Image (cartoon, rainbow, N blue to C red; front, side):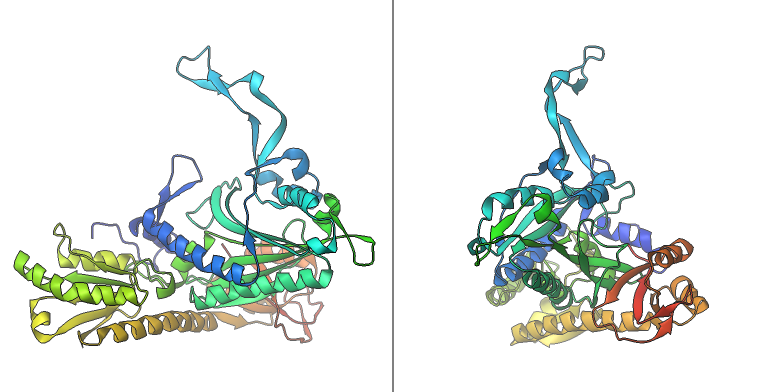
Length: 492
């Protein structure tokens, strides 16, 4: 195909950018820092959204929608949250434009339309939601509130990359209210497990479940839990977060409930979210120099059938044999594309669907029809074999299941090979700089040491693993005592 190809091993960043563009996933927009998600990319996002939405509802959550604009006075009420997002906020000051008297054809903000109070374009929705919950919660009978919102947010990033970091992005944010600390903590962990299950079973990306350090914690949270995945360049990607907010927002917005005993108490809160950053994870965890490699559970097209013919008569014969197969596969819940375009040759189509990561490709020509067979290619291993058309539906379904499992196993083996247990500063620097992977290392627990390590190596503590083993050791930098290892890596 007539695309500039960059090898993943030569320039990982350029390889990623080219792949997003060439596979028709997204492109930069006229708005600096923002992206246009193209139909094929959005189809993948819809599959992500559809499954996560199902999982949220299975755990008792309902969808709602809250305003895009947050009055500045509300945004300021929880100080840590406001300070944490202040530098990324876009602010609306006027509600009308008018013609510029000094420059014909240009518009300026109408001074007479200045807002009495500035509006923050939501970077996150805690403030507007908790101001709303204050009206919803009176008694223990009103709890818990289990709400999720699918929305867009704006965080004014200066350095952007499609899907991974843009000024505007799509996400979901869960916001729940509970009567007790225990219930809120259980909710926080439950949703972390939902994210981990989705990442591993649907995205085929193994993740580490953990808790963030105080330095890396969400602004306004008492604890932030996360899932961390490894990309094919050895860097970490935070793929989802679940926050235990304690009573911080309830106190800021005075959200209290009457207990069964008749007293008044502040409610306990959580928030949790994933975003279109998952698209970046999907690309970087599995894809290769030929293009996307998609896990079947999230692929917009599971099977593409490419006819190989020289005449219209041959095409009609192939179509007569293929269309019943297509219907049979679709009846089994698969998405099937019969690519009978007469504007492109089979070789072009093979390359195009390989670039777009379609898990299984069938090629059928007159000779295949005569033999009652088809050539079956699997995208993950780039292997091809001839298979009888009789009973091929079962083979394809088994093949898709095998591809899903193989992608996870391959990513798990890659992560294992790029994960290093280190005990000295020299070993740590080697693991981060030369081997480019995850370093499991002792840390003394201080913010000062954490910041110094980041300054020296650009590696951060991705998380304190939830399954961390208690182990006496010494910090790799300070030499002070440590009770267990944490995960360091460079990250997106």
